[in-house]
Length: 200
Image: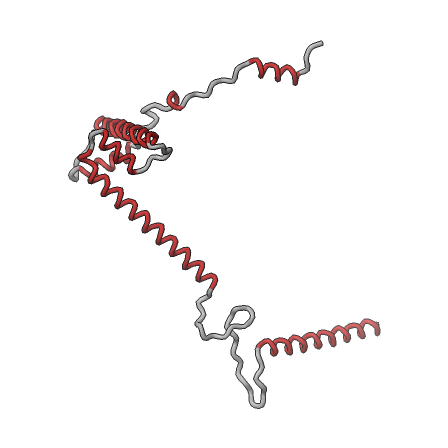
C-alpha cells in the first residue's frame, strides 16, 4: 500500500538536508555598501572653492575610497569592542581604532565633532522633553487664574446679575430650580395632550 501524502511529505523533509543560509559575508560586497554619491558630492563641494566642478570618475573614486575607509575603520573598531567584551561599538572604540590604524592626527578634530554632535542631540532631547512636559502641564491645568472659583466641571463659575430683592444663590441651585420648572411644564403639556386624545 502506498504511503499517504502527509507521510510522503514528512519523509521527504526528513531525508533532504535543509538548505544552508547564505552567509552574511557572501551576500554583501563593497559595491552593496557604497556611500551615497549625492552625499559624497555634497561633502566634497563643501570643501572646494565655489564654481569648482567634480568629474564623474573623481566622484566615483571618492565614493569608493570613503566606503573602503569607513568599512575598514568600522571593522577595526568592532574588533576592539569585541576584545573589550562588548557587542556595541562605542565612540571610544572608534577613537582607539583610529589610534591603532595610525590616524592619530585626525583624533582632535574627530573628538571635537563627536562632542559637538552629542551636545546638539542632548539639546534636542531636552527641548523635546520640556515641550512634552509643558503640554502635559497645560492639559492637566488649564490656564485659569489661581483666584477664579471653579464649578464642578472645572470651568469658571458664571456670574449673574442680582435683581432687587433676589437672594444670592449658587449656580447649582439656580440650575436645579430651572430644571424642575421645565419638568413641571412638560408634565402639564403631556396631561393636556392626553386629555385631548380622550375627547376624540
